[in-house]
Image (cartoon, rainbow over all chains, first blue to last red; front, side, top):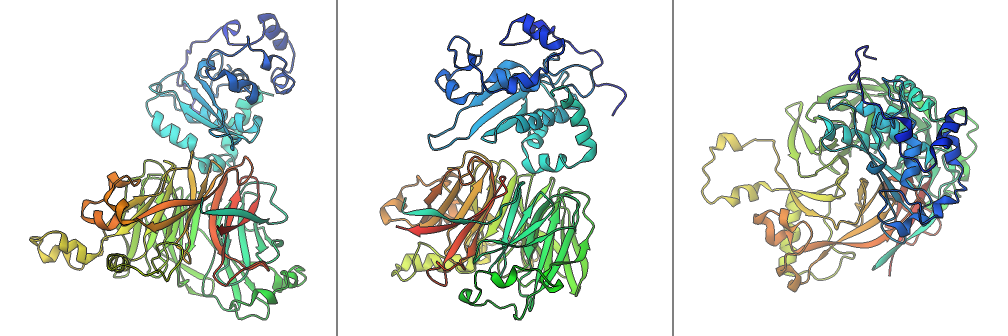
Length: 197
Length: 429
């Protein structure tokens, strides 16, 4: 990897300011030695049905109980991914942000297919690693979510100089499949995703 | 809907990982499925069971495969892989001349299933090296003389088999500006179509020993995943025999002069129908022929235009489109897991005067009267064809199983991310 980092001095968000459903103390407890993400994969969430605990970006609140997976949970799955060039999480670098995660319920009653759209914000507009970060987010979600979810990862509009080109690559199933058979790239992705496990 | 799709059978056993594409054998009741587990599975289309697993030739996913047409006494399969190579596999067909046998003679494919002796195996015979990155598609020309391969390296290669197992690269075509996703040959001419990540479709022909680009079809607003030609015989409607009006006869004649059309499916969620403008039509459009003859005569370039768009029903990328050479029906599938069957039919005279047909805005003014004589309608739809999984490929194949109703009957084959290959029948109510 390039020894000169694209952005040597990124803005870092204090962990206590990151969006979370839980109290700060609980977050600290996890940091102290909990398995973190695994907790979130346990399906028995009583609070998912709590009408008073809807995530900020939810507009179709009726569908949320049916979905059983909401934006906060998607956020929790990807916020812990490590940045490929900083020893920091994508959440703390504000590369992934809760308001930029959108879940679309099935388009018809006959369909079970939901769509997750994640818009990522590179730390600087010419970040050469935007594609790798996007790929990490897509791979993480495809591995963690049930197959009824279609995962779309895009660069947030106006935050990257070549966002259209990066979006096209990230949306290309065949390219993503081939990339996952590339040993070098998989090594990078494994390091990024290691902090999720 | 006037017709419906029924699941006839899945192929057993399925693959445990993503399957990309299935290719029916040109003359035998066999289906080859390319899989991400680096194998090709050969299934029987009479018993719907696995006959052979071809493995050991590729280091990465096998993305695509195609049977060579016109072989005698043996089956020849080309494979294309993410390892950037293409492979040629051969298998002697026992006691057969390679011609179609009566499906009833093939007792559930039972005489295939042992694999006891070497003759029952597919042998890896040639490795075609040259592409810089993943091969996405391979296709044999209708006569079997040429093999086209295409890759993420933005090129299309044409190979010619000079003698057994001796393949020569006769063309490397660099027209595309992005991954080349799919290649497909014209059903009778040596005309090749390729579709790409650069949102275009390009056509190539041989001109004085050199293969050259003859047309660029642009209009799609996303990767063009797949293209397929129409059969040689144009068809409108489901059944022949209905008396055609003079206008309709003229329309069919005009279409025969243009030759088979091309269907393309894209990430932009549209399927477009492209048609070749006839030379006569070209000259006829301008009353005063001012173009010096030296510029227009002998030109190998072809003029293709977008004739129609199929009704928009897919919600996500359309990965595959297949045009039945027998019935003229089109089937499509994609990321939304739907299978859609489209039929071209005559418009009633009243409808012809209206211009609400999909794609009307993009229609060529010169051809307006002809283009609006027919319309495409969806006649059958299945949602969640492979449960919640994406469907990567769909195509038509001859029906061989015992339930076959007539010689012309076809089935639809879908290939999905769940590793399943499914066989569907189309019933007209």
